[in-house]
Image 1 (cartoon, rainbow, N blue to C red):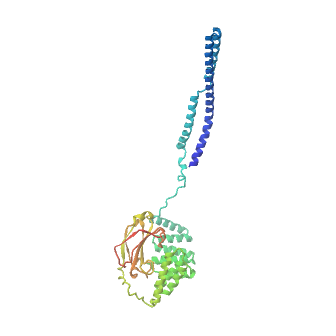
Image 2 (image 1 turned 90 degrees about the vertical axis):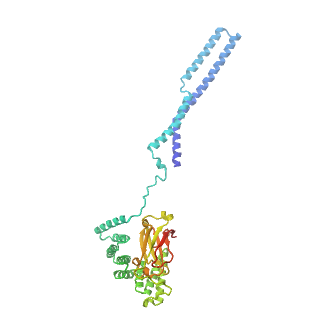
Amino acid sequence: MSLFWIAAALLSALALAFVLTPLLRAWVRASADISQEAVNIGIYRDQLRELDADLASGSITGDQYARARADIESRVLEESARSDGAGAPPAATRTLAATLALALPVAAFSLYLAIGTPSALDPEAVKPPVEESHPLSADQIAGMVEKLAARLKEEPGNVEGWVMLARSYGVLRRFAEAAQAYGRASSLRPDDAQLMVDHADALAMAQGRSLDGEPERLIAKAVGIDPANVKARLLAGTVAFEKRDFAGAVAHWRAALDRLPPDAQEMAESIRASITEAETKAGTGSGAGRAAAPAEAPAAAPAGKSGISGTVSLAPALAARAAPEDVVFIFARAAEGPRMPVAILRKQVKDLPLEFRLDDSMAMSPGATLSAAGRLVVGARVSRSGNAIPKPGDLEALSGPVAANASGLTLTIDKVVQ
């Protein structure tokens, strides 16, 4: 911006130089003429005084005096005539020059404000507009999903389209439709282990989080195709654990743990805890029959009656760090042992504050229920990414250990995950 004004000032000065130079020259010439006229008239006055003195002293006669005075007066008249035709008086020239020097820049600036683009001088104003990012609402997502489904009727061989449709149905918790879409994608890529395990996961969710039947078959097939697939190994370990094959569960989970990326520390910790639990059960011989409960473990609440209830709210100090469409996970996990949630509820920030209830119907796995977990830690987390795995920047609240039938809990989300 300063560069623009410097350039404008230089150009204005150049324009004024062209306009004012002739006027200033005329003013100088006029000033010189006037000064010379004043000198000449002064000389003529001195000559007249000398002439008067000569007449008074008798040095010249009256006729000589008259002729000499007439000659001097004639030269004075000639000098006055030249001065009258010399041009504008110096004061008028100076006034005109000063007026132009002020008026030209003011007129140019006023014209620029009227028809120019002053806002272009602001660096922020010339930046391209940035579209505001707003999270999509559930209705908007549903509309986009229906359009994608309609397009795939015309492009049934579009594998990526079917995968995108399946994931979108998963976000909307329409798991049966997600399973169908994954099935279409898998039929187009029959040897894709990741598609198989995603298909199995959607099927399990559609049938009440049960891995029995087709999900189990697909998981085993995926492990056979790609033994390094982390999700396939995790689900295979869960299948083995539910069948009380604790050694098999440990083997699958260790294989998954070895292939986790370095930044997945939370998941790694959860897998290690699950491995410890499976090894403990295998070491006590629980794989051969029903596991013996530790003497100090609290008795599980009667089936169907366990449930944790309370309220969740977001601390006002953190309200600006969350968008209305951000996902809120409300979960319960064992106070000791695996950190994998035994029950989870998904809401959005715009739903807060809210009352919640967690029970066995929300279990992540049929073999790991809230009523069988003993004492629990209840938490609420705002996930900006929509991922259940905590990430730096997420907002969180955790309770202390509570019973499986605790009620009246108050969770205020007031901490930032580091």
